[in-house]
Length: 144
Image 1 (cartoon, rainbow, N blue to C red):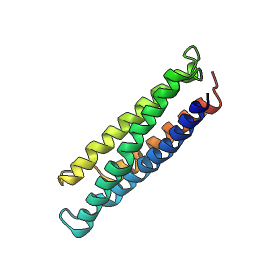
Image 2: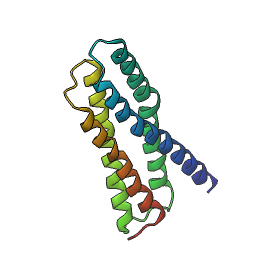
Image 3: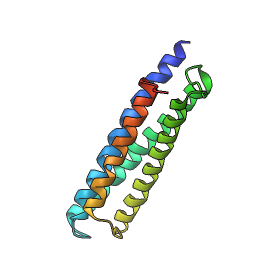
Image 4: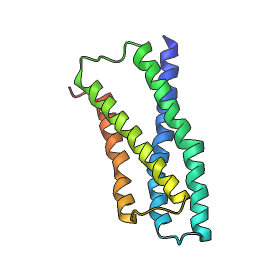
């Protein structure tokens, strides 16, 4: 089943790209909050955020889901009777929800209607980190 190894490799690559964007975008928001609306800095952040979302985060999330689902349904690697599988799945769904939130916040910045503080985005920046820790521990350690 050599294809499984290729799909695993592509899954890990896409996860790394997705997480890189998920870690970076909220940091951009932290700095964007402090830029006056309509300023050159604000407009630059808008371009950076849009490109990051469209060119990296969205395609990487899509690839992560496609390769992950191929592994789930095409290989015997997933045992749904084990608790770790369900926790990992819930964490991936939660990560996708955070992705959706970041997308909505990006659109708010794009339209100059952000109402959230830099502190909010600093805290939000930690959520993907916590979720990825849970996901990795579930997949590697399989604690239950």
